[in-house]
Image (cartoon, rainbow, N blue to C red; front, top):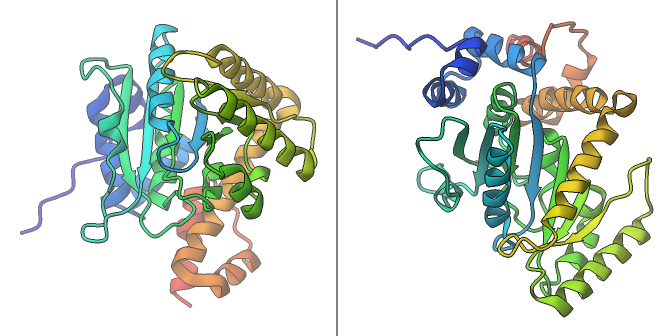
Length: 311
């Protein structure tokens, strides 16, 4: 006899109940995909986002987890609640998260204002599975700051802008990353670029100059000028400049309703990416031809899937 699935917590429960209901909701993202209750919760969460969502991406070993640790500590010192979603490569054997970034992020387990979760990238080279997007949607409706740290596989970090309000690209000195990112077109992605390990003074300055040159070659679009910041999370060097850049980008997004426009575009992409993964390019073409006025992106996704499945 099958056991009944426990009811999902409401958004009010998530905001009031601490870590346990949040963990239950994120577990449901992976075990109750497409269920009406989960779809309704996700749409409610999408419509009631309150967090600043910071996306950190870059190759393994660049120092993303060290930077995340510092950002969590600073957010808590300011009285802000914070959630970290660490997206790791998938294990070929289990499909679960492989590196376990959660183990590298140091938090007080008794602190109800911090929540950390690892998720697998699964088969998405861009770094974010549909489950990770859904998890981030829930977290940003509950916490003040959400940090999404992606797998960072070198030339496939582009999915981070599916959920992030501010995309931070991390580059390591003397690694050749800037040339690789130029080849991959990744320089079009970030809102802020950091060169980590600024204590490697000369190499750090050279890397920052290379990155600035790459940005100049690409040409600036819009009114936001991408800052390049040298920092060392271990020593604190450059962290004040980094915080200033993040705050400035938040102000930029609030001006002229840019944040609302960015999130609306993200919602459209969530539906399209989910349909494409499940039904392929032809399914996406058919979905775009449908006229659907569903109240939320996840309801819209479910409606499209139902119509495509039924032929």
